[in-house]
Length: 262
Image (tube, rainbow, N blue to C red):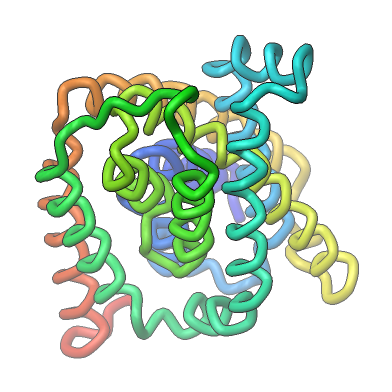
């Protein structure tokens, strides 16, 4: 992996992690386009940690408050959301990893993400803030996050849509979705490190590429979160559906007709 490729992949990861268009699906596509065939677990872990830095930067006040007052309701809501995410992720980890390797379902999952975004665009902003949000609401959103481990299913799209379905107000829906990503990203990183230690995962990737990719992911992630918060305030999430519908259609055509990348 070259330095330029690492920077581009980092930017793609940072932007698509928080825009509702699927970071995992885009990374699979970009690696196909670049012809990257060697294991990239180390790189994947580093760019995920880069996006984590972006969440810390945007939501530093929330995170500081959680650390100062760990037994507040927001903490328990995040825990209630994290548990089902972990259960779904661990239970279906091998199945979803097989999807990543084959790429056979990628186009259809982009279309599914588009359908979810169109549906979420019909949902009105609810009135639930932290005080009114129930632990069942949080667990439901956590299940949505767990299902988003599938390639081309957007984590932010699914969790924000789930939050709106449970009548959270738009601002808190976005805030909760992004904060809920913190334990999910950390948990995924732990599993990736375990896999790296067991089977290796890109030890040939240079340190410069790892650092450049991480920094690019952090900067792009920061911009992406700020932009997404504005999009949600304006209720325009459904417009991302048109992009993923077009992308999904192109991927399906390539998978079954042109075979340029698949």
